[in-house]
Amino acid sequence: MKTHYYLGWFNNLFPVNLCSLLQQDITDRKSLVMISSNPSIYEEAGATERSWLDQAGIMFDEYHLINYRVQKEDAKTIIQNASVIFLLGGDTLKQNGFLIEYELSDSIKKSSAVVMGASAGAINMSAKWLCSKNLGYKVEMSTVFNGIGLDNFSVLSHFDLENNIALVQSELSLLSEEINIYASNKDCAIRVKEDKIDVFGNVFLISHSRIQKLDATL
Image (cartoon, rainbow, N blue to C red; front, side):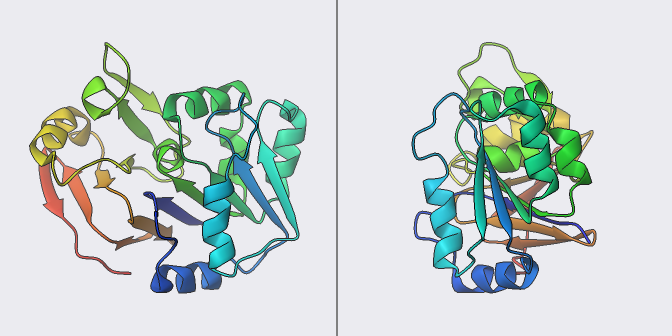
């Protein structure tokens, strides 16, 4: 049973009902594996995301951080033994490049671990995502990148959506003709379990160029 959490960013820790769901879903707590979004920077990576789980009362026997300090083959072994895989927030492009360079996507897809991602990590968990300057990236040309593809949709996470609905709808219109896009700001979550999609907070669905706010189910 595959369980995936696509998170925004939580400034005030996880809400009680989200903590409760995570406690139910994360029963194996041997190993938390965090995947860096800026793998050449080693200081305190993942401290915030780990604190969310700590505050939810979800502790692990072992904690691992995969970055350039870890050899590629060791990284794959660590992922194979993971209870939870957490793709950290930060630099979406650098994390995407790191996943490709270390060939981690297949290992993550084959894993039976609960997979979580915050902000950049959530975007890279999805099937495809749009890299565009209008969505906050320092690029001249818009490009569609492939993510890990844990589920067949796209994610726009931790973006100031409410103040930019028209821009987001216009920017993502073309991609939304090909694939559903779930867009959210901070303090939001999308949970996929047994092909059932649940949402927490203000989450919007963009499909075939139309945007609609989804009713929260968590």
